[in-house]
Image 1 (cartoon, helix red, strand yellow):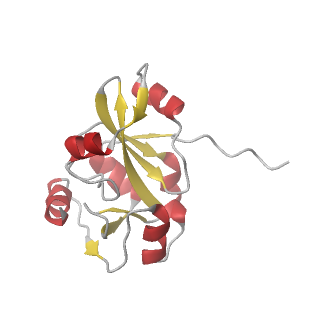
Image 2 (image 1 turned 90 degrees about the vertical axis):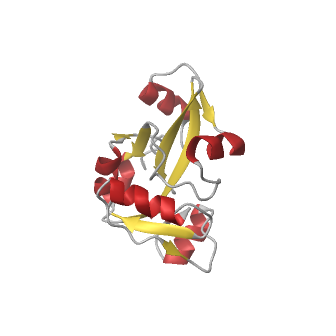
Length: 156
């Protein structure tokens, strides 16, 4: 899978160092601990099914994606998180390793990731990831930069 991600990056004109780590990176917490960053800097790639078609969401690890917001983003009546089988069928990657690279699906990109100079995304399996500038990644993917989670309530 790592080779697929590296080739997809090259095809998009990106230079990324896909690293295989000794520690697992399947969850946001595991990935953040493995690379020593905030959970918000983990760019988790999730698959949803929007009116029957798969779509990708690249979201900050600090957020829980709001399906209602996604339905508006993709202009669909129904949206739900994909099953593990649907994820692999749509992307070729297993859950916990879905890379935003090499999937060729419509992509919604969490606007809050742009608050960081670098983020970390999965590299194709549960032990690999790569570091990238989020603006560069979103531009290369032709992703729609949008709000994917409800904003936390403002402090009083």
